[in-house]
Image 1 (tube, rainbow, N blue to C red):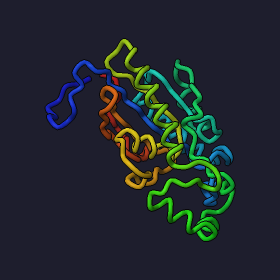
Image 2: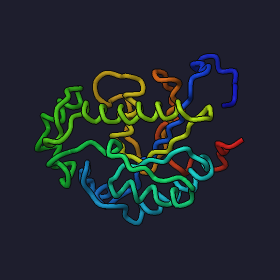
Image 3: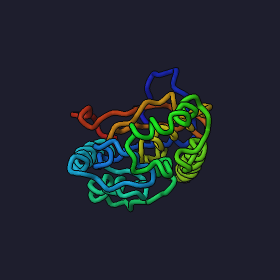
Length: 232
């Protein structure tokens, strides 16, 4: 890790550093038609496939030698990961903890319809009340499984022979927001983190087991022209 004169950045000392690169999946037809997905929904549409190719090029430039690559087991994430993982010599590890929040019986319905029919429930969620979405998951349940994923990854990084451990994970907007909220042990829901766009890249640096730094949030691949590689 390069030493810089940033005295307000937490010192790593001899603690392992985890670089967690989070990529939201590309666009699907349900995204395009504003249908709620959750644990359901199709793979990528043509726009999403082009987005996946673009983000793969940027990932290969910036992170050509990741220590691990993960993906939600849902098809839209696996489709997004494919152009990147196919160029690497590391296996793709599927992890259900990276799934989007389960929206239950709201899945497949238009967002405008649910906003009207379940306005009271939505207001409760927006005000931080931890209630299920469409008889599916609560935000707390989403945060619990993303927290478990990060804790396992930190333990794995601690056993790595190098100082930094880079993991790339293909996930979903809600899950990425939950990962950030958990990294900073923020109370309540996910309100402090805005929506994550299709194929945007977000990066967390984790020092030890309890200190995190936002290195990047919700950056579209088009912003990375001529960005330096992770390699020296």
